[in-house]
Image 1 (cartoon, rainbow, N blue to C red):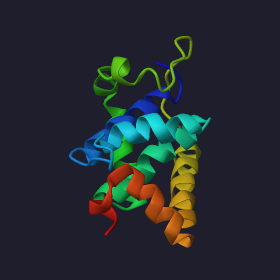
Image 2 (tube, rainbow, N blue to C red):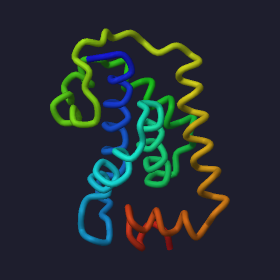
Image 3 (cartoon, rainbow, N blue to C red):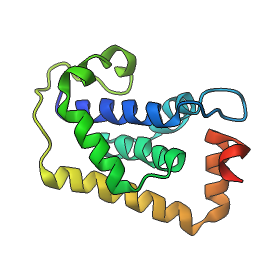
Length: 142
């Protein structure tokens, strides 16, 4: 597993856990909606991680710092993350990369992106409502 890829997989694991039991208006699991409709539209690993954490935030109400701590804890259990490679390898897979833990500034960058995304969506409540409705349906936004 490559550099930063383990963080992306861990973010997907965290998001999947937090969105468990939530469904979109079309009946798909909210996690599948995030995986298929939102995460593929962003290019960098940091922004993909931020997308997963953005939706986890709205699913469980955890603060960004709490989510970042959960993510950090997950990434420390490399065996657990490796156990999900096949499940999430379509997200991004670079077999020639080498693994190493992220630096503190890289963690901070991801946290800043998530915080920025949440602030942007909160500035535009109608856009936010529409976006969250696509993922969670009425139950989550009313």
